[in-house]
Length: 338
Ligand SMILES: [Zn+2]
Image (cartoon, rainbow, N blue to C red; front, top):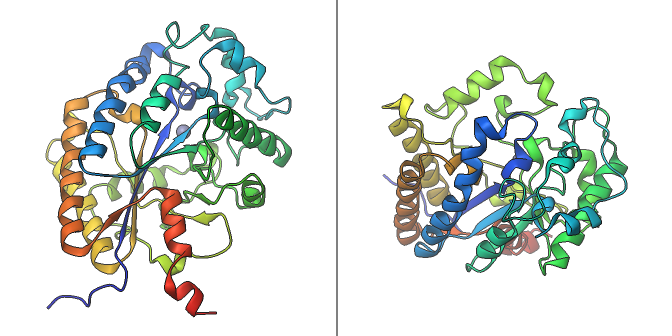
């Protein structure tokens, strides 16, 4: 027996946090993780070719500091109001003295050529990951500093010809008090966290080891369920929450057989979303593909191939976060209910 066909097709969302060194500088060194960051220059073209082959739409949540081709242009666009985190090492502004003059000299902190490659591929949405990789739940930062940061991101994008509609909060530090600021600055949707308890976020310091362990386990076996979402449950005032369903963990040779479980968990949730007319939202960072690129691309190809089957069988649709927002707001039931 099969379940009744869903009234509207399901939606496959992918969002990628494009950040290069800005997303990991406080945790990693160039010596320790630099190869992954440089590997992004091969990973992005490889991913784009696959997305084009399978007509997959993707939201690229990009750090605002990546919208510049020279250090001089970057320095001229910095907001005057900046976050003063209790832990000063969290602030990316401390890295400014070590920046090279441009992308050719400093491929760790500049990436405008990559952004242009992304924007040239149909269906790819340029979105924001804040200007400075801003941490919305860390002690010391304020609403005024967040507003200045996001305004700088909007301005930097506009200067390159992009309008920002979607946001991913760095480290998934989702601050509900900041949604009104997002709306004022033109943001129509953001990626919220998975609904299960192990994905609830406070500041980095308050993460419990239990949460980390449970998230790791959940990647391989079904602890939290498919984490897919009915469109009606996502409707509401702007910005809409298009929550994450799953983080695509980088391929790990050490985990061997577990790799199969990890992939099966993702494909199963996609099938669930396609059958039920729900939203499945997968995310990762390009630098997760910065090492072991062939193995990571093989996993992504399995996912894309499964998407293709679900599209044929159930009309499963690949949409960016902004397109998903439009689809949710345009539902016939959204107006019929009134
Ligand atoms: Zn990030």
